[in-house]
Length: 140
Image 1 (cartoon, rainbow, N blue to C red):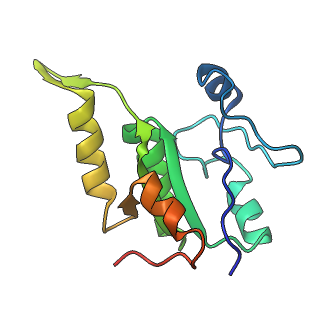
Image 2 (image 1 turned 90 degrees about the vertical axis):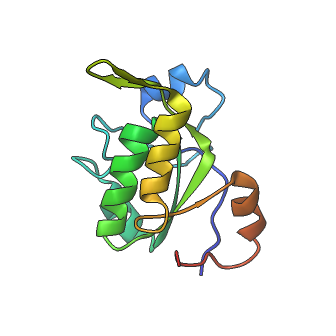
C-alpha cells in the first residue's frame, strides 16, 4: 500500500490558496484540481485522478467543515474510499437559522460528530501523522 505524503488539499482552489496566505502551495509537479462546488468530486477530474493513481484512502482537511469537508467526505465515502478527517486541520464559521446563532466551535463539532464513524474516522493531525509509518486503517 502506498503511504500518504504531506501535501496540500488536492482540490484546493486558486482563491482558497490566496485566502490561506500562500502558506499551502502545491509541490512542484503536483496535480492541482480547481473546483467550483463544495463537493470536490462534482464536475472535476478528481475521481478519475484518484483511480488512475490507485488511491483508495483520503484524508480530509481544510475549510469549511460544514460545506466542502462535509460534502467531499460524504461523496468520497459513497464512492468507496476509506476516509479520515484531520479534525484539528479544519475551520468553519458561525451560522444562524432564524433567531438562533450557532458559534463556529459548535458548528465544527456538530459536523465532525456527524462524519465520524459513518463517513470518516476523525483524528487529530498528530494521530494521523503517527500513522504514516503504518498502513492506514479503515474506520471502525
